[in-house]
Amino acid sequence: MATFDMKAYRAARREKGLCIECGKSSPERVRCGDCQRANTEAQNRRAERNGSKGICKQCGQRPVAKGHKCCDECLPKANAATRKHAQSRRDRGLCIDCKTETGGKTARCKACLVRCNEETKKRRAAWLADGKCRDCGGDAVLSNRSMRSDKDRSNYCRTCYFKVMAVSMLGARHHWEVLVKKLDECGWRCPYTGEELVLGHNLSFDHIYPVSGFPERRHDVDNIEPITWKINMLKRDLTKDEFITLVRNIASYVK
Image (cartoon, rainbow, N blue to C red; front, side):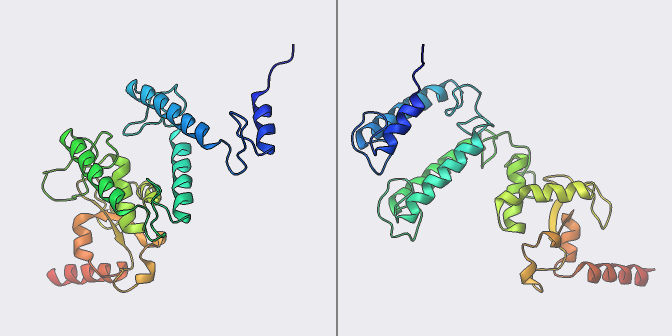
């Protein structure tokens, strides 16, 4: 007995410019307006049910990742789809949340921007009150306040800590793994003192050629190296060779 091929049936409707659900004319979209709304509502109900159980809203099988609504396997795909959807609206000059006209100057309209900022503040305040990472809601282990007081030290999880540092040193959060690789290459030791580098305590990243004299190398991966916070403060706007020469001169004179 032949089995019914739903994919082939829907593909045939799509080729004819029909809604894949009800068969009404829909030359520009996969579903007509009514079916699209019904499908979205069904997806939202399913996601809400799965979310209440701590299950991934995409696959409905695996547990969610910390601070997210999807599992680790579905999260990259979900993020990519969200970015593509938002970019499509922005290219048309629409708010990425409510589709209000923005003229393409901003991603969100003024009302959605205010709402989004307020939601972010409340979410971060709740996470911080629970001792969670302020960016993702995961287990916080350290802060970016290196070599300072212990107050509010548990602000970030390990990954988000490096993402914050990556924005400062390399201009984008997605370069955070480059910083981890730099640490692994030096064995988590300061190249000047040999001191062990510890996240949230003495670790910092330095521009070998200072930005003040070499602005074109601000986000150059080869111009970044991990050192202790104290050495970073001493080195300031000197190059590596200039700093080493200065230290040798001081040591020679003191003797």
